[in-house]
Length: 625
Ligand SMILES: Cc1ncc(C[n+]2csc(CCOP(=O)(O)OP(=O)(O)O)c2C)c(N)n1
Image (cartoon, rainbow, N blue to C red; front, side, top):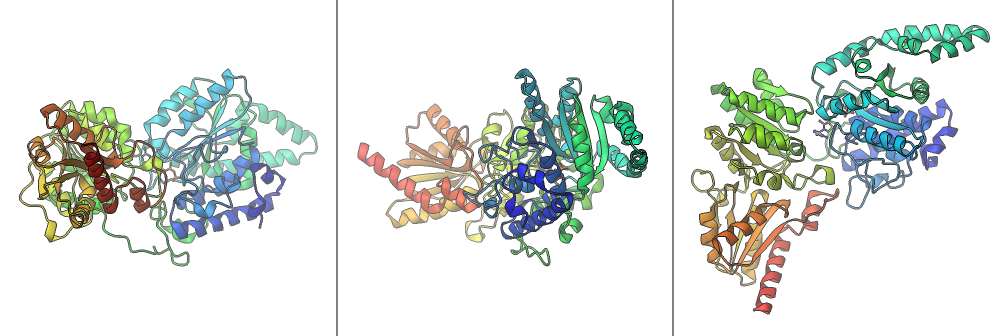
C-alpha cells in the first residue's frame, strides 16, 4: 500500500503519476472506511483528494503554508502529513480533529472551522513572509461556497491591490453544502462551462512542443509572456479586475494537469487564483449522488450508504413545519438561511413557500441585516442560523435589528455542546454574546413542546427575539409538561425545594430534574425552575425562590463567562439577596471534539455530576459555617 509509506509530503515527490493515481484511490478508500465508522465530512474530502496530492507534490509544506478554508476537506491532507496511523481516531475524544488544528500538526498552518477565512489568513502569512524576507509560498484553498462569504471579498479586495505573492486555489464543485447560490457562482458556472476552451489551447501547446527544439523553446518563451498564459486559460474578467492572475478552469481530478498548473503558479510574483473544477463526493457513488446528505454524515453502511442509526426528528424540522403553517395564513412570515437549508430544517419551508425563502449563501452578516430590512417594511423574518455561525453577525444583530427594535426572530440551532465537530463549532457562546444586547428576548425551550410555544409567541412579539435550541429538543412527556401560556420574561417553577433551587436553561432542565431526584435520595430537598427566558429574566421568581433556599444553582450549556449564571449572580447582588450561588456551565475554554455525552461529562453537566457538585458545595458551606 502506497499510503502506508507516506510519512510526510516529501515522500510524494518520489512517486510517478501512475503511483499518485493509485494513492488517490487508497486515500478515498481510507476516508470512506473511517467516516463510515465514526461519521464526518465525506463529500468535500472525496472531491479534494487529487487537489491535495497535487498541492503537497508541488509545494514544500510545512515551510510552504497551506491554509484550508472551513477545513472540512482536510482528511487527505492529514493522511499525507504523518497522521495515517491516527486517522481512525478522527473526531473522537483524544483523537485527531476533523478540521486543521495548529496544535495538532505543524502541517496545519491555520485552525479553521468557519468559512471564508482562508484568503485573509493566507494574505496575513504572505505579508509576514515579505516583512521577514522569507521566500515560502502561501496557498489558500477554498470552495465556491466559501466564496459567497463577505470576508473572501474583503480579502480579495485587499490582496488584489497588494501585489503580494500568494496563491488562491478555488475548489469549485458548484456546491456549498446545498447547491451553491449567488451571482458569483453563476459567473463561475460560465467559466466552468468554457472548459472546452482550455482543451483547445492545450492542443496548441502540444503542437508547438512537437516542433523539434525550436518548438519547445518557443513555447517556453511564449509562456513567460503573460498574454499567452492568459490565453491558455479562459478569459476571466472578475478576478483579473480584482488584481489576481486567473488560471483555469483546471480539471481537479487530473493530477498531471493540476501539477503542471501549480508548478507554473510558483513562478509568479503576484496574487494568483487557480480555478479548479472538482466533483463533490467523487469516487463513492452514494456521495456523488447525494453530496448534501454526505457532506456531514453520521456512521453509515458503505455498501448502501444508509445511516447506521435512524436519524431522529430535529428541532429545526419541527420549527420549519410550524413556520410553514404560519406562512400559509400570514404573508409576512419568511425564512432566511445562510447556506444551511437542510441543516436548519428550512429546506421544508423552501419547498412550501419558495417565494418567501432566502438562502443568501455563507453570509450570516448579510442574512441578519437583510432580515432587518425586510422587518422594517412589515415582514416577519425568521433567521435560522447555527449558534456558532451567528457569532459572525454580532454587530448586525445588535445595531441593525435590536437598535431598531425590529421583529426579527433568530432561530439559533445547534445551541450548546455539539459533539464531534469540536471546538470551532460549539454553540456555547450565544447566551453570553446576546444577553448584553438591550431589548432582545432570549428564550430556550426545555423540550419540543416548549419550542413550539416559543415560536408561536415570537409571532405575536413586535420586537427581536432569539430562540436557542439543540439539534434535537426531545420530548419530556406529559408528566413535566409546561403549565399555562408562555409570557415573556416569566419562568416556571417545576418542582419546589427547601434546601436548593436549580435554575436551569433549555436542555439543562431535564438533567436538573434528575439531579433533584438524586439529591432527594440523599435527604436534600432540591427544586427546579425552568428559566426559559434568559432575557428578560424573571427577577420576581428568582428573588422569591432564591430567598427560600440555602443554595442557588444555575445550569446552562453555555460558557460561564457572561452566561445565564452570571446574570443570576448579578441580579441577586443588585437586589441584595445574599445566597451562595453555584454556577454550572461550560468552563471558559474551548471544548474539543468528542461525543456530546462525553463533552457533557467533561463539563460536569450530567445529572449525577450536578447532584455531586451540589452536595460538595453544601458540604463546603457547612464546613465554613
Ligand atoms: C461562517 C460559516 N457558516 C456556515 C458554515 C457551514 N458550512 C460548512 S462547509 C459549508 C459549505 C462550504 O462549501 P464550499 O466552500 O464550496 O466547500 P465544499 O464543501 O463544497 O468543498 C458550510 C455552509 C461554516 N463552516 N462557516
